Image 1 (cartoon, rainbow, N blue to C red):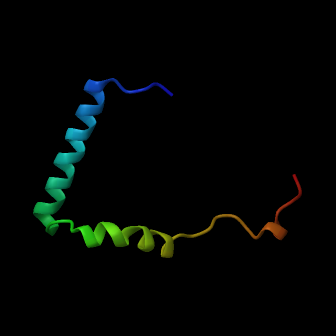
Image 2 (cartoon, rainbow, N blue to C red):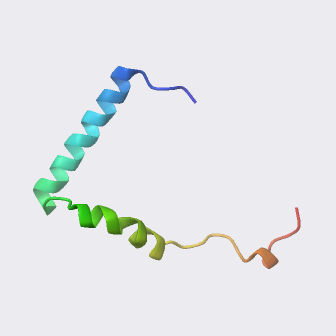
Length: 59
């Protein structure tokens, strides 16, 4: 994978910053509590796409 130049990285960070600012204008500030609770929310909404180990064929 090609590494990003400093300019490309800064452009991506600036685009992300603008996206977050737009979200916060529309929905309100993203709080530290929301950020801290997000991994738990992500895990509870996860759907496993593979079967149980016993359901899989041996490699």
